[in-house]
Length: 124
Image (cartoon, rainbow, N blue to C red; front, side):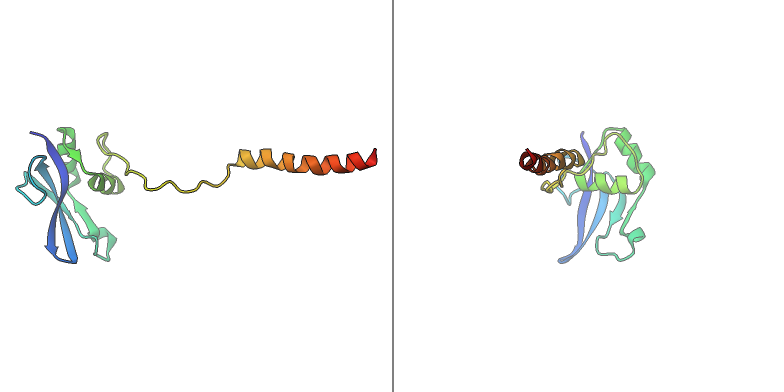
């Protein structure tokens, strides 16, 4: 039996609330759970009450081979649960990187070189 740590959606429409659960990977999202481990309310204004989890039980399941979803993994990392199965969230679209310092340094002498050559050419 493969176990996953994932969210179970609760609440009404446009007012979602999630329960963190250890679930058999073959069961549906809102199906039967093995153990309830906490909850996540993204609409809560108090950030300490937004994500509440039993970190010791989460570590237990991670030690026994449970695989967390991406969202669960990132929230557990933010709350201080360190484990080798926790992955960093996948990045979105790559942002345009500003030019590196080395590129500026290389470009600056090249721009100064023609200016330095022009007076030298007129002097001869």
